[in-house]
Length: 299
Image (cartoon, rainbow, N blue to C red; front, side, top):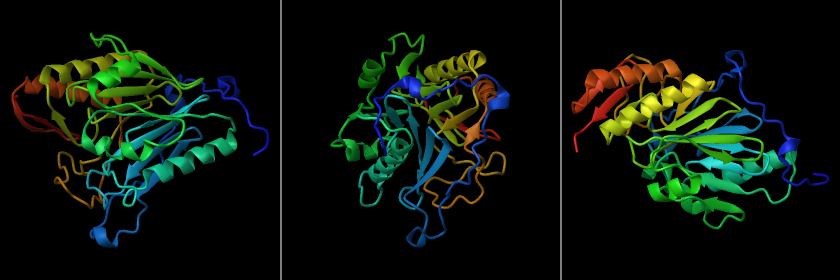
């Protein structure tokens, strides 16, 4: 690999996204399960290099029907993994092995010593934190507990949730936006380099389960306001549950979804979710819209 470098942020130029004409399409066909999980031949984890510093991963539906997405972002000084999937066992879900391989691949192109990995979470639900234990003994790795207090303290979010916190990866910074509603500990991550807005289970093409109705509305308002002053290329959640038929979602525990819409959503779709919130007006129930379904049960 030649002479190894120190993690100098200036050695890689993470130029922020500035205009829509710079937006890169995802350009990927996601694995979407099979009729027989037993005979599924897809990898445990699908790996898609969005660009040379950004990886999007999806867990195989045959391992867990949730099939969550995860995100690995490389900065000049450290990498961050957002979420660790729905399965703890490395025998059945070899996430650590996949991440180690991806880090090694990136370092082969951008050599540097002492390159740490930070593991964060979009929220605290089991299907996004189950693989944490695979990283517990990984050298140079910090796994931040997904509980609300730990996430707030580590990221430096304010109790008032009134402004994003900034996380520096070395020349590449993430804005961390408190996003309660689906889960009190939910955080949305914005990457200025790609323009990706990573919304976890708060917004995605599927069933939006609302735990705290006022907080959910405030979060969607917060995300829209943020997107109005920051260029957003894609809104990326952590699941696909809708079909390509408007208003039709796949049943829970489905292991084969051959007709999925794209993972990526838009700021206009955020606005449509906001309009739906206004129409629902806090009434408990299941509300079906063409691109998403909102579930709310009163506490």
